[in-house]
Image 1: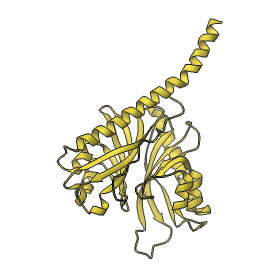
Image 2 (image 1 turned 180 degrees about the horizontal axis):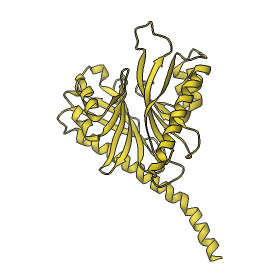
Image 3 (image 1 turned 90 degrees about the vertical axis):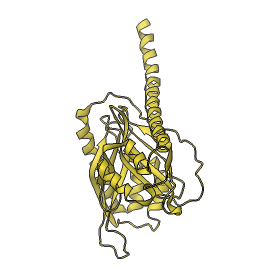
Image 4 (image 1 turned 30 degrees about the horizontal axis):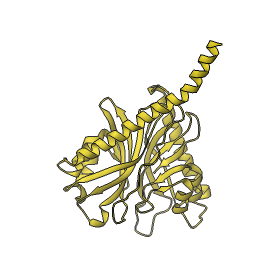
Length: 294
């Protein structure tokens, strides 16, 4: 009888322990993001503030190709007026972590004090890896949102894994392959049913879109879908695939980066190719991938 009682206690306690561990991991990640933001006030330039948190292998989308590596990324920012002088500040509004505790993401609001006034208020999305020296950003994106005033949105409940596991580097290639396959299937599906339908099918209820919605984060696959293609097209004008990815060994969180290309050359002066950055989540190591932030 005592053995049965002990076993029941362990079964009851296990989910609580997993939740506490995941919460501790996301708290650690958010604390790191906030610490880098606090240190940014003393950085010589806004670009130097980014240098402190960027991983050596950081990837930044923007333009027709991915910018790869800290030096290349910083050169990109230092060439932009908003990042050459003044200050940068930011605050996260949500974080999420992988089941093995090694990777995570944050997103929130960012502001610069230099450059065109209408482009100073921004939103950002960061994907992090836990290195020996602490959390570091391996993929980062920021966009102006054009709204006046300072957003007052508070913290959103974190994205926590539904299970816990120890890190296993040998599992990473398999999970990278499955994530790339999901990204390809997403693009292929869009060719058959249109962008709006594909974004609805492949997104999560808590997914966010960075670029749309002004100061607000458009939330949920339904809302994101509505903003992608309101015309109801049943084919896609673009296609895309993964060029690089970073995926947790637990197989439940990863970031896919690549290039979106027009199916036909554009006639409106917009580029025929531009790079993308999408964070994916799944609820089990072998479940379906769904995007959670893009």
